[in-house]
Amino acid sequence: MNILTTAQKSNEAIQEEAKVLASSMHMTYIKRGKLSIPALFDAHLCDYIAVFSGNGLTIYFPNNQQHSFHLSMAHLRILRLQRGEGDHLINAVQTILNANHPLGKEEFSFFDCTIGLGSDSIVVSYAFPQAKIKGLEGSLPIWLATSYGLAHYSHNVKSVTDALRRIEVSYDTFENYVPNLPDESVDIIYFDPMFEVPVEDSPQFKPLRGHTVESHIDDKIMEEAMRVASYGVIIKERPFSSVFQKYPPHKWVGGKYSRIGYGVYMKELL
Image: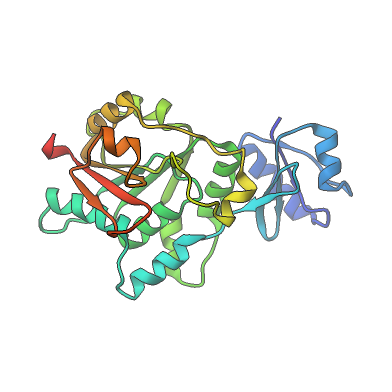
């Protein structure tokens, strides 16, 4: 059972809002009362508990860890874009756009198959305000936090808040979702699966250890992605990963000594 409750000191308005939120997210609302988080876990034997308060939505786990939406690395990447320093993912997207629309058309659809905490999609949405961006997340607690944050988090810069609101997120895995999409129904498909050889743990991922979905790109998914994409596919991985050995990109976008980068696959070159 997936549980949503409120902070201990919550007024009636917050409780009513929590009930509506629980229903929209297909969760069971539990009246909090004076119960502590550990007491709630003992009482309901669940994997995680969503807690709604005036500060937003926080996901609690039994190991005393918690997670709520935040801009994470997207904040620093947007600052770099504002300073004109560029971004490797934006360069990868622009590479595909230039190949399909030399005049620089920015109205396109971008499908993030592994949205996670939302950083990549937020940066793309900020850089391309006319883009139609959708994403998938296969971990329910991560989807809860990310989808709520994209819909409700407010930044002090309106263009950043607007970038969040333009992103739609569904709860599903790309293995299940992509094969059901029509031919050439999305312009650019993006994958950022768990790295084969992990980079050292990022602080924002530590509370989520054990709650992520480890999806992998195989022949079927690569074939389906290229069928569905009308412009091309982008994969984020480490340069020496097996996915790039098996599927050599048409173009590599990343620094010469980058630990990670973006493999670009052009539909027109297949």
